[in-house]
Length: 139
Image (cartoon, rainbow, N blue to C red; front, side):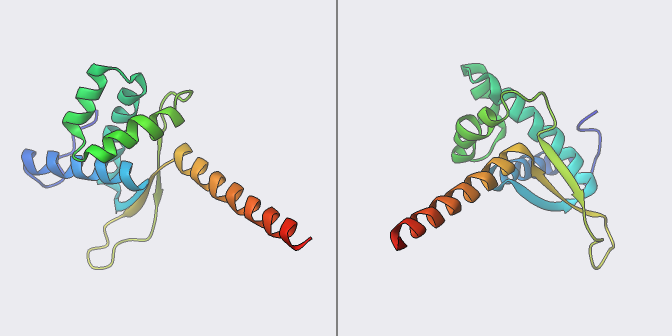
């Protein structure tokens, strides 16, 4: 059940931290954090994406009440949610990395799956177009 981990914080601190981390994840596409935090962030981020897929007034109010930045909320409705319109869950991926130096906490990278793949494909396509344009200019 999401929200059952206390993460060593008071409830207000924990809620604020999770809101900030979900906002940052949706803004940048990936973050590095501990595994237990990532599992909580994944649950909330996937709920926000699922809510944003509906794109009506009620879902906008729910998302605006949780996400801390207006630009990120707009990005969620305009770019991220449409990318997942045919997918039922599994929007985030957790990749474990090396333990943190100092306290040896398990670290990981949490990222959006399909959205990141589409961005990479767009970059590759734009590079290919530039290469073709350079070849056409040389010829």
